Image (cartoon, rainbow, N blue to C red; front, side, top):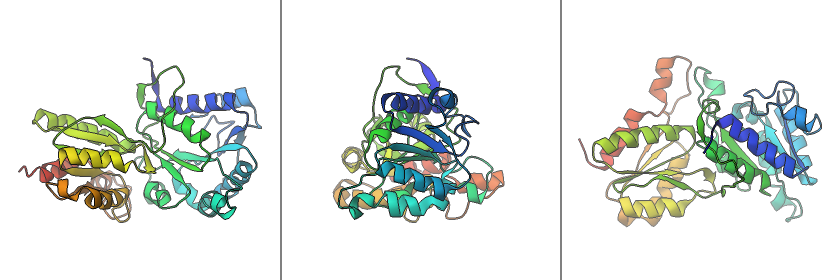
Length: 326
């Protein structure tokens, strides 16, 4: 199977869906003439023209609103934010219009729109460009929130998101665009809301999603050398969450660790913890542990970034804790 970059997988998904459906278009800052801030849309202006690959001013509220209106009138916009940090300018349109329109209209207006772009830490970008918004948007009914962890998922999940009739928040990472992975040449779709068991195990369940899943894999490899079998669950989407897969895994391993790049309060890890203690409490042989960002803003200094973000050491310590290993 061929190997391509994460950005190339996203581009293929966009190209395929735009060729298939003339109602799909891409709009955002630098997506056309500049070929995309992260080169996801490279070459697309030449093929589809300026009516479907649309550059915008730095005005997220404005072009998000245009996208919502277009979706209500039968089109399928893909709105690219240069970073989801900038989506805060547009959050009124996302929450109060896109997410609520189907309900407010009594089912008369659906909003098939995808808001996509990078989220979270991407190096020394400091506090206003390093936040994680997965749990923010997952808190809102009416939205679906998708977080791919590799090129294969990026393509299959983006294609499904574009075809979905609900508004989808599609979270990427600047640190993943150059990642390479195997992606089939033939068309495929991945179901939204269905988690993937990335690695089977028997001793502990480790749940994660997005780019930080790399740490989960790294730790599982290390623990395997010590005789510990870690089952890794890649959520793929955090709204809806595939609770059934998580609960079934915990009933098998009897231990749960959740790894997430986000602040701890109101996190996806908190939600999963509640659900597992509600529906699998009697199967737990140890308290659930979670590894998140420290409860502070992400600073510029590399030493502080390292101290704040989840890492392999903290993840291994949590696994050892639930296994009662010294």
